[in-house]
Image 1: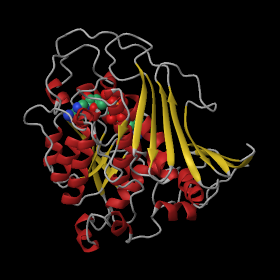
Image 2 (image 1 turned 180 degrees about the horizontal axis):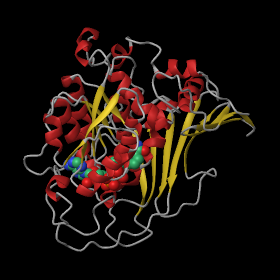
Image 3 (image 1 turned 135 degrees about the vertical axis):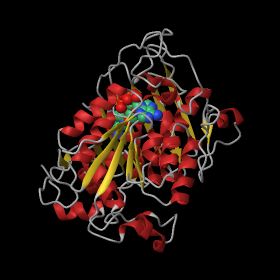
Length: 451
Ligand SMILES: NC(=O)c1ccc[n+]([C@@H]2O[C@H](COP(=O)([O-])OP(=O)(O)OC[C@H]3O[C@@H](n4cnc5c(N)ncnc54)[C@H](O)[C@@H]3O)[C@@H](O)[C@H]2O)c1
C-alpha cells in the first residue's frame, strides 16, 4: 500500500507554511525573536552562495543550489585545482553565470557579497571552517559530521549563539518527506511505546594499502588541506577520501554513515544523551593504514529506558533487513523500518500495515524548490528558505550536534576499549579521564578554533 504525502502536509511539516515565524522557533534556545531581523536577506530574496570542497559531496551541493530559484553560486572553492574545475563544470549544467574559482576559502569569507557557504571538506575542517564563516557573517550549511570530536560540537553551538546565523548540518533525512510524515506518527504511538532502535550501514570497501611519502602534487595546496590538523608529510594514499579512516582527519564509518541512521533513530525514539555507551569491532578485513574500525557495533542506553545500537561493516556488504542501510524502530505494538525516502510499518505479528516508497513531493509550483524535492535538495532548500526568514530549520544545529555526539562517544568507547558512563545532561564521560581526553584533539599551532 503506497501512501504518497500530501504537498500541503509536507510544506507544513517543512515549516514553510509558517512564513515569518520560523526563525523564532529556530533560535528559541539561543536568541530573542527581535534579534532575528539581522538574518533576513535582501528584499528580492536573492541568495549568493559559495561551495567549499568540490571533489565529491560538494558537487551534490552545487546540484541542489543550482536547482533552487533565486540562488546563485558565486564561488567554487577547493585546495585542489582539479576539484575547482569539477565544481565549475557541475555549476554550468544549470547556471549561466560562471562562479569564481578560488583556492583559499579565507578569500571567500572576506567577500561581503557572499551570503551563505556550504562546506563539504574533510571532517577535520568542518567546525574550524564553520566558525570562521560565522565570524565573517555567513550562514553555513555544513556537511555531517558537524564536528570532528565532541569539543568542537560544543564550540559550534557557542558560535551559533554568538554570531546569530543560520547553521544546518547535512543530515538530509531530516528533510525527507517520508521521515517528516512517519516520525511524528511514531511519536504519537503508531507502533506503541518505542524502546529500541537499530541502525546499520554496509559496504564493500577495498584496502587503502600503505601510504608512501611522495612529493605534494602540483594540483594540491596540502598545507591548506591540513589546516587545523598537525602537519604530517604527504602520503600517496591519503587524498582524496581515505582520510575518512584516520583519526587525525576523519571519524570512521560510524560518523561517515552512522550519523544518518542514528540521527533518524534518535529522532524517532526521542532521546538525547545516553547514560552508558559501549563499542566492539576492529580493522579485520585488511592490514593497512586504515586506523578506524571496519567492523563496529555501538550500543547506547538512555535514561528514558530506551536502547539504541549501530552496526557498521565497511568491508562486507551482506545486507540487513534486505538493505545496505536503514533504521529499525521497535515498539510495544509493532516495528518500523525507516530508510530515507522509504518506510514500512509492521504490526506485532510482522504484517505490513503501512508503507511508503520514494514518496518525495514532486510539485513544480512548490515555492521551496523548483522541481522534484529529493531529500538532498529539500534539505538545502530548507536551509536557504530559513536564511530568507521564510522557514524553520529541519535540522537545527543542536539536533546535528546531539546525534553526532552519540557516534563520537561510540568511537571513544572503541578507542579506549571499555564501556563509558556518561552524564545524561551533557554527554560528558564520567570517572574516566583517559576517555575524556578524546573529547577533543590536538591542533596545528595557529589553527585552533576559537569562538
Ligand atoms: N550528507 C551526505 O550524505 C554526505 C555524503 C557524502 C559525503 N558527505 C560529507 O562530505 C564531506 C566531504 O566528503 P567527500 O567524499 O566529498 O570528500 P573528498 O575528500 O572526496 O572531498 C573533499 C574536498 O574538500 C577539499 N578541501 C580540503 N580542504 C579544503 C580547504 N581548506 N578549502 C577548500 N577545500 C578543501 C579537498 O581538496 C576535496 O576536494 C565529508 O565530511 C563527508 O562526511 C556527506
